[in-house]
Image (cartoon, rainbow, N blue to C red; front, side, top):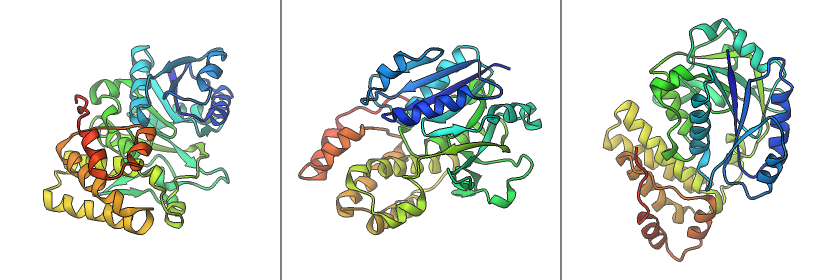
Length: 318
């Protein structure tokens, strides 16, 4: 079975080096390692150019996690791999991670095999694997036995069968970031089973976006673009996969607004964006911006002027 490992990176060269070292230390190495550089500006491109045994795709502009993984999955599939092993640059699989996935009995009848995601201290980060019942519900730690079936996964340490990708399609690059992995999970499970292999582990070292920390610290305005994209994408998948009606969608937007009031810096500046992007999600319209573009718009004298500038950007085709 041929495996292509796909790592998406953006401005985290040190973490990327550790991730690639962990892949190189596998007891069962992938036949190909592909790095998608999301237009990094920290010297990652030069560093990657000097590495042997890697294939590198450098995107001209930051396409978000969705665009990065979409490019990687497409290239791996075109290259003839039977499986694509996906992870961000802040992940480090255990040395026997890939071997345990491929040797699992679930490998014979699954479209996706998911590693158990653990924190640097070894505790299980349950938020990355779960079941979808009107919303993502993390799989309880007590169920990390056998090979339980999942309803969703994140991009951290999943092994995807390319024959399933051929029918379901790859990650949707229009979604840019946040809830893009949920959307692909819901689409993939229409074409095959998603199984957790608890004995295969991968360390996720970026603790900056854990829910507990988000509740303790206010989201800075400069980083609110993530949540805005997430609200749009969540409204999109709720309509696409659950047929959510307009009144229920208004309630979902209200929940995002309430969270902004509780946890965000300058929430009154962000709320109009949440409402607008919620509407765009319902319409299936995806106008994205880079973190740099958002910081410039966040400094604009009024959100309406920034929105008008963004609205002139066409939505990418489906």
